[in-house]
Length: 407
Image (cartoon, rainbow, N blue to C red):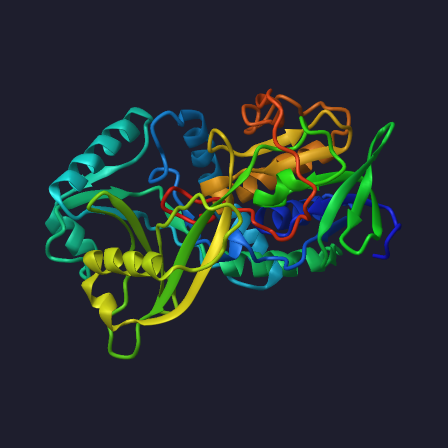
């Protein structure tokens, strides 16, 4: 697509949220352009791919938990169609997650969370230490017990974004590898965007899916900019060598009050994560953070000592004031928000894409106030937010729990 050529839908951000929206919009017959400097990277690349509505059900987030439960049910069909269109497996695993505790206080905290999750009707079954080790023999002998979270699954997030790019291209989606510095508007609503090169792209609809940088777009009034912030997270990727036993279950653990998760992949690698830092747009890797994460992981799975460290990645989750996504129409005609997914970006991608596609096919607002994101629209933040004029660079879409990056 050349600058100045109109398109139906301009998607600002090429992470899992932006790519999912672009794909579904293209399937619906729209001409779609995605603008991102590195499609498929950012928080979506750094994530662990956990689909964890139960493990991430926190006190005071009942509505978000209900949304997440609906989202995990949408994943099998989404994965099947994505694999068919892309020709690429995304390794969806629906066998549940083990939640384990290292010491008595960790077990007490785990029990409190289990009681709360049961009040929401979620499937969480207590397991003794012996039962936990039977389910995952590599667990440390000192594990005090835990629970089976049968509705918490996982998918390979990196394969998902790669498959989405392939599926988008097969449907004619155009990719522009650049940054968006400004959304342009006229008397009737949005007219397009301006790139970092100062070139303009015209479009009748602009979907802001730029993760933690969504609030930095120029050209928009302050009250329209979403109140999102970067929340730094770190993931490590380890691999079991020949003759070393591989982890066979996804494990979430509390280690002396700190959260840690380990997500196995079919290639015998394991994604390890847990860190959460409010450090602005800093993506540097600190030795202390890596050391703490490895220490906690080895307290859960001692044999990780023998694994190879193959990758260290940081990502910036898009956090919102209430930890929930910001999806829906704004006060500017043709401008849609799909950001702020924080700890649940991978999980919520299918539902977000479906909801935005419905909005695109209902230009006059018939879908407003309906659907799974009715309680998570941009209008719920009444107070003005900080404006910014910096460029939007990257697809940081995905969410992460206090113990996850991008999910």
